[in-house]
Length: 76
Image (cartoon, rainbow, N blue to C red; front, side, top):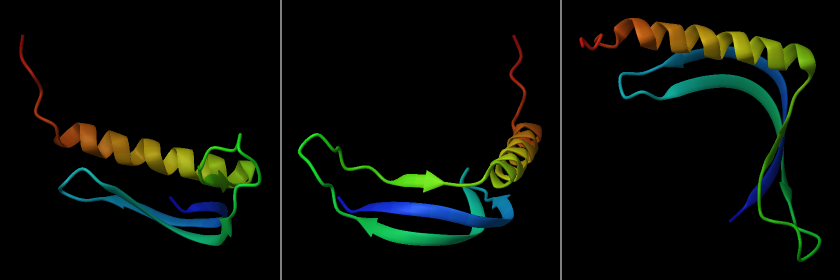
């Protein structure tokens, strides 16, 4: 498994498709990482500023609300 350090510079936009996937357009710096020791599990890390985290969170919330509007309401 390849692992990466991903530093998000800017969140540009976000949208969802008919198959339930959410697509985010971001400017990011991506670098491969080599695990240094035996204790390091292979995992990628995403780093972003507080401002970008807030933007990403608000965009995700908006996308989830839009998806919830399209769901059929269950009746009990």
